[in-house]
Length: 173
Image 1 (spheres, rainbow, N blue to C red):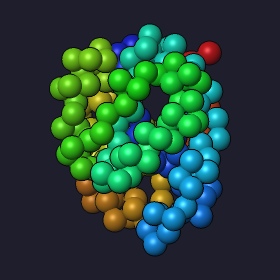
Image 2: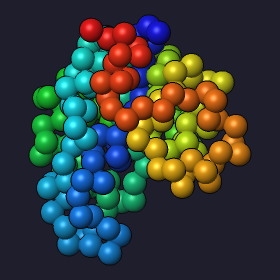
Image 3: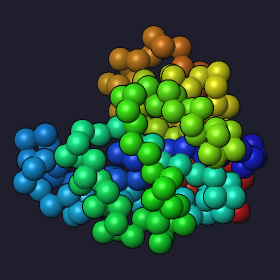
Image 4: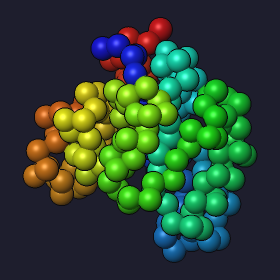
């Protein structure tokens, strides 16, 4: 696999490690959102991938208005741009819900044709089948995979547990 084109990635449970925190829908407004850790190795890998893709890396996420604000604060607090080399201008709030492929034309215009997509939801990746050649299902939840198995997307994705696996598959050095 090559690193031609561009890479787009989700944020929740791909960059922000919700599973390593105590956050729940019930305590969302009470918890210190900045205390949620980053996914282990994500920032370092994203820095290397951003170089390998010549700066053609975008983050695209779905969130409510309140979560949107907390996410931006989290990114600044954790020095995301400084540590990955990915500009905050490359962080896109999805207006299409989980169908992030609705942003593909915008992404392709701004990021040299997206060739790689990383997300933790099979449902999201199902929208990219046939449009993006390299689809990575990151630390999937088995119940979500079972729920969306009928989309037919599973044979088109590579299931990975770490960012290093993504780098190895893409042969990023």
